[in-house]
Image (cartoon, rainbow, N blue to C red):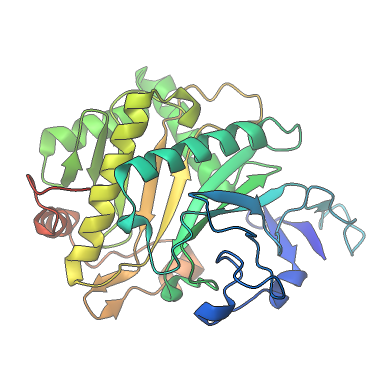
Length: 330
């Protein structure tokens, strides 16, 4: 069963997807459903091993192309909707032991092209208002399959956090005539202390308003709205900065760093949204080498994050982490 239920208190939709309780949970490597099929008697999601990147629809989707009718008849207060949408899995590589940080820049460039293709195709569906591309990395994040992969959710509505960003951007433009994230980037560059790395197209910062200790935002210098606006040079520069930032995360404490990578871009609902600005946000749960940041009472119950570190200090730590300026990144 999969359906949408309206939360009147928070003015937002909740996805109810009971069948996801049955999804595969941390299988051993020999039985990984995302590895290429080795024995036809035990088929996996990928029948052949000669691939670089693969996408397919999630076997346990939160949103479905042909969803069932809701299990409960709605009321004026408790509204329901079929959970129409698409959930896809993106396999980054056939190598079970690799991570996104291990892949070469050319491979990452190809991945960005795949993301662009999926954004455009899924966004063209008349029931899809927002295409959300993301990666959950690490068991502490809640990953249930260890094989390197990301996901794409094609929503029938604009998710609440993105909606808040859209509203903030529109208000800022109405008040100042400027793009909010262009102004944020100008302020970060002028200050400099929170900049982690940069190239001709992108700047990586621990933002002034970071909620997670090692949170990083990747912001394009130009006012790009979505992956569809990227040139070949933009894609290559994004691949480079992704490689550097992911390597820095792994080099920070000397182990493979878990995180959520969230791509924020223009909705596909047909609206203007010209005041929005493409960006990628990383939320790593570690606050020190051996301590995690948990979303406890203030974050979960009040919706207010408490960051017990300074963004300026965390950015300095990340700047010093390998790879450093001038070190080769392949």
